[in-house]
Length: 238
Image (tube, rainbow, N blue to C red; front, side):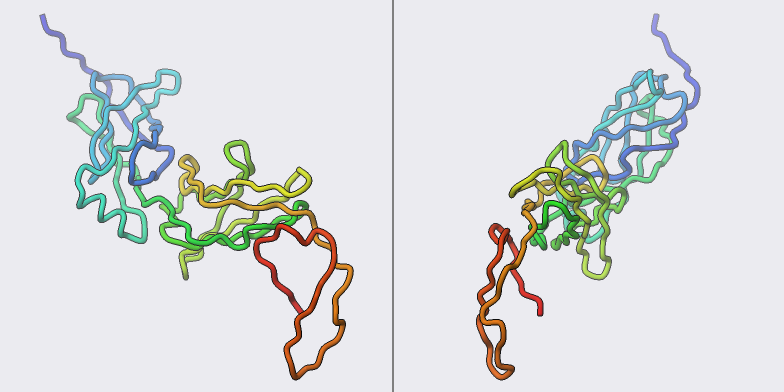
């Protein structure tokens, strides 16, 4: 004989993360109720595609990986937009009856052109500004990380007027010149290496020559001190 199984109607109320890069592959965890029934758990990202989901009995949750866009037109539309593209998330336990949707978006990964400044003192926090394209993602969990996977994570702020992103990097607990990897995320899960940051010993000035100049001509000054090597953006302020 053939057997047919009836199951309680499922419901979903939370997806983590709520956004992902358009390239696909991000694993999304979906929480709800009665998610263990059925024999074909499926996630549908509207406008993107469908993928098989996996059930976790320990958390009564489903997990599925965001698919890449199914066609070139969809991929191009996402890549050229300046904001995230909505891809509402639906779930089915049998591949036919879907519940939802939950809010979900896909976005183009960040493309950083400049990092300023790219260096700072060891014992002080430094506000770093990133310029480029697609830095805001869906605005879910904008963050910077300095020092790789085990490094410090700080929140980032998007400037809507020019699309730049800024974050305050923490001081370093080490000593001497250090180069650390800089990464950005727009969803708290997918990190992208966008540059590096150099920690330096604090500079100390001991002399300037000449100590006075004419107001009518430009003059080159020679400044001496300690800790002046290794910087990335030298400037004088009068």
